[in-house]
Picture 1 (cartoon, rainbow, N blue to C red):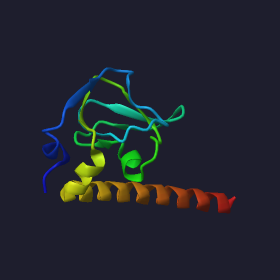
Picture 2: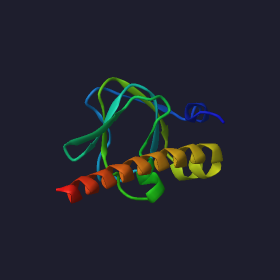
Picture 3: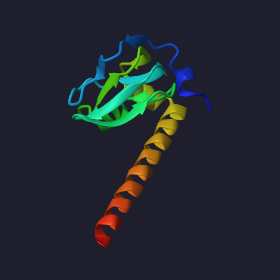
Picture 4: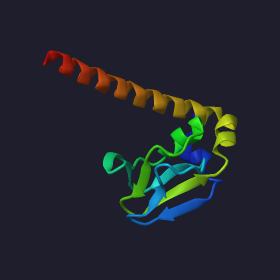
Length: 127
C-alpha cells in the first residue's frame, strides 16, 4: 500500500509560516491538506486539541468528508509545508488505498474518544 505522501506528489505545495492559520474553524473550503514537513496545532476555540508533525498526516478531512465547515483551526507552530488537494472528494473517491488509510485513522480517533468518554463517565459515577 502506498503512503499518503506518495499519492500526493502531483498536487501543489503550500508553505505556511509560524503563527499562520492554514484552516480556520467555521470556514468552508473543502480542501484537504497533507503534511509534508513541519508542525501544526489543532485548536477548538482557544483550547489546543493536539499538535501534528507526522509527514503524511491529513488536515481538513472531517470538513471534506462530512461536507461541513471546519471544526477546528489549524495553525503552524514552525515553518510548515503541505500538499493542497482542492478537489478532495473526487481524490478520495478515486484513491481507494488512501480512503482506506483515512478510514483507519478516523476509526482510531473514534476509538480513542470513546475510551476517553467511557473513562470520564466511570469516574463521574464513582463520586
